[in-house]
Length: 116
Image (cartoon, rainbow, N blue to C red; front, side, top):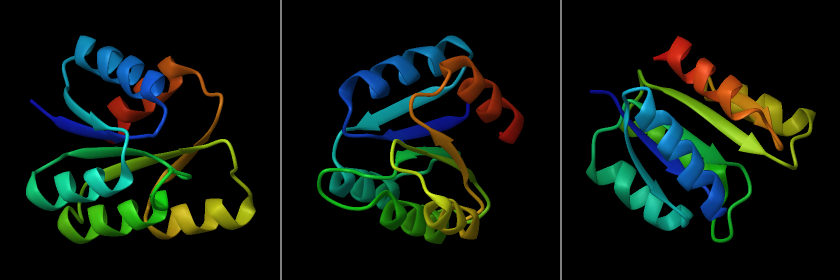
């Protein structure tokens, strides 16, 4: 079973995405803290990452960088309500797709399915 980590300071996004992903067969883990997300990524094996760009404690880009260091062949999606062209270019550098908030949950799940 593929394992996905979700890092977002919005509790509702974490819970909803986790439930939707589990319904289609993924194992999920989530955290509302960027620092805790870094810790989990460094200590566990994940097949995919969904991360918010703007977290309360650190940047989602820091999490992407760590994820790519520990899981270089895995996929990722960044979600953001603050996405500009510069942010999109940074996400692309990590081979990451960017979803603007608000996003369609089922489009995001479909994208995860196609990337995994």
